[in-house]
Amino acid sequence: MRKFSFVLTLLALLAFSGSALAAESILVGTTTSTADTGLLDALVPKVLKDTGLDMRWIAVGTGKALEHGKNCDVDLLMVHAPAAEKKYIAEGNGVSRNEFMYNDFVIVGPAKDPAKVKGKSVADTLKAIVAAKAPFASRGDDSGTHKAEQALWKGAGLAVPDKESWYIAVGQGMLATLRMAAERGAYTLTDRGTWIAFEAKDHGKSGLAIVGEGDMALRNQYSIILLPPKCSKIKHEAAKKLEAWFLSKAGQQAIADFKLEGKSLFTPNAAK
Image 1: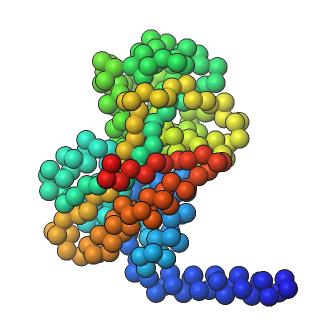
Image 2: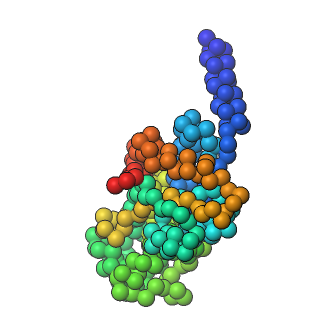
Image 3: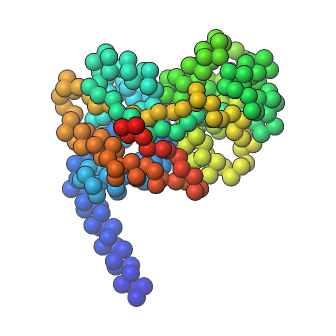
């Protein structure tokens, strides 16, 4: 019986591998959070089954992803920096922008909270960090999270930190930034999805905890951008098919069903 079960499993794997080999591949320029959380890995078999597309991706900060799109190096974009995206479209680098899911940003820091920011608004949190000169780890990589962080400093009426001794520009992805924050006892801004993924692997050993959440300024919207005809060598029809899947009932349900440690990482919101 065990041998029969093994054979069935092997046949299923071979069937899936064969369909993947026969499928049309599509390359997505996306952010680190969609990859680091495991969302895209979880969606690959569903995308393949429903669309016949073998979804692959390059996961970088949103700024770099937008550059990949501008250079026609990817077939479509999946990013999370609304202001930059709208400017990108206005400049003719994309033909459409459709929102399809969101989560939120949270501010994390040492569980002992030396700057005493827990429970404060985002603006008051940042002012307290500046006053205490408490270490703050920034993505520093022109990603969607980095852009959001810069907007929060400005929204608090503060200058965006640069060379202050307490400000740590990591220049890497969110997981690397969280690890740096843990090592340096620093505060940082992270999307909730990546924080949940980090916690699942860390098991509370980092010494970090959420100290700020729930502020409307912390909403983190994700959108899909289709690229213009000038990108003549990319797969426009496949890109439209993939976008349609993410906006469809099946795609939205797949996003809603994706959980880690029993927690939802993203909320679908196409056409809302």
